[in-house]
Amino acid sequence: MPEREQIKKPAPKEREEVEAETAAPARQGEALKEELDDLLDEIDSVLEANAEEFVRSYVQKGGE
Amino acid sequence: MAVPKVCGIETEYGVVLRNAADPNPVLASSLLINGYVEHRRVGWDFDDESPGRDARGFGRDNSLAPAIETHLVNTVLTNGARYYVDHAHPEYSTPECSNALELVLADKAGERILDQSMRASRRLLEPGQEIVVYKNNSDGKGNSYGTHENYLVDRHTPFTQLVRNLLPWFVSRQIFTGAGKVGVENGANPVDFQLSCRADFFEEEVGLETTLKRPLVNTRDEPHGDPQKYRRLHVIAGDANLCEVATYLKVGTMAIVLGMIEDSFIDKDLSIIGPVHAVRTISHDPTLRATMDLADGGSCTAIELQWEFLRLAQKYADETGLELCGGEVGHDILRRWEETLSALERDPMSLNGQLDWVTKLALLDAYRDRDGIGWDDPKLALLDLQYHDVRPERSLYERLVRAGKVERLVNESDVERAMTEPPDTTRAYFRGQCLARWPDSVVAANWDSLILDVGSEPLRRIPMMEPLKGSRAHVEALFTQCTTPAQLVDQLGS
Image (tube, rainbow over all chains, first blue to last red; front, side, top):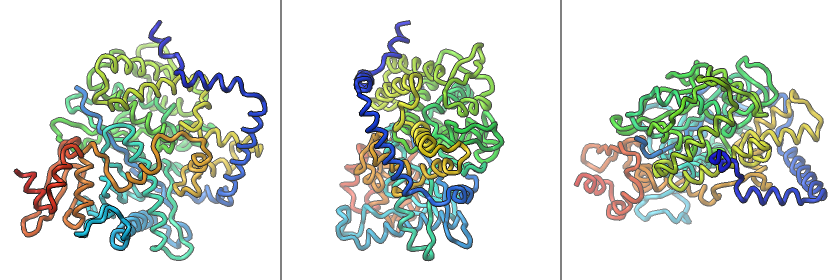
């Protein structure tokens, strides 16, 4: 059904991204992994201490 | 017939008062709001650099007028929003907006107002105490608080027509509106991760309640406008979103779908069997393969049901335009909606940074991968909670924004302006301008009226029953002409 095809066609922007991704060498994958590790390290530094206790103590009254 | 989709979002924030002997959430919420309002007053009194300050003592930054319904803290801000204590939560109701993009801005401004409130409230607390708020919808222990959307709807549209079409809509839209949650609540069958914070809390299809036996379609009928012409559809079946793209899609698609319902454009029966059960089935399957049974036979996934709505919406846009459903924003929504469904079909994780549930899941997966931890590890529950922390320095969502991992639709200087200035396009402009210019003369402000003290005369009530009247285009000239509220009332009366 032509209408369906039209719906499924990805927007031009997406197509470019797909091409860029497939052309990316493995090195880029490593760089991304490193970037992610840095981000997780950063998040570690702001995470509340004692996860279990912290989550347990978060109790709300129902609202609305 | 469709009416303009004036819209707004009310958010009840989770709140904790740390290191207090009595961590009373009502008190914490009051301190938070008072802290903010007082802080603004101080800024108005002493901040000589405020460019909005007026020699007559009017300040654009000032922001307090009591509303009338309740003795709890209840204020109206110069941006046209309502900021108050509701039950045991601080609640921020955005000003009325006329499209999804305006509402993204107003909603984000609300987060910043809560952040400033936390900072300002420190002055009111004992040393070591702290108030922290979370923009989420449950505490993980079976207690839920809401994020409600509101849309202007034609009074003449039969409510049953709304219900019939909205049930499958609310069930299926979770695939892009969900904020994601680790685990389940309220006795649901266990899953590791689900799409929506809220899905576990719905027990009825239709009803008036919002706290017990929560219905998917809420029947509250307070139009806050001309009751002969309008309904305000009060949507309680939605999550609090942090991702701007998610809010944008949530509101923008809803506006178009409501337009279609009002114009009786949905010509097929999209009803599903057992929507209350289905809302969980869909939420509990992040692979998006779960199916629902259709009332007229067969079954389909949430994505397939969404394609049905989208195809109708594209046809609706071609045939009628989207003038009343966001105009240009409406057309952009259609493009986004299509891209989102394609991406959900191809690889949901490609929407990391656009949808909250995907963004949260990607973060959780990264931790599981790095630390080799299981879904029952409390660290994942902590990541889930702290994703929603409103303090920028603690919010994991904000960390991802700063790392460039999240797509933004509005810029921060506009957000900052939206904390004090109303949208131009609705009656919120009139409300906000009155409050900014004559804070001491506004005795009470409400969604659909404003009461002014004009001096020796009796108090004057200005009705605002048309949500689109009172926009900048309507009343800017009036404000230029009038230097006092008395003049304003005279001009309005003439």
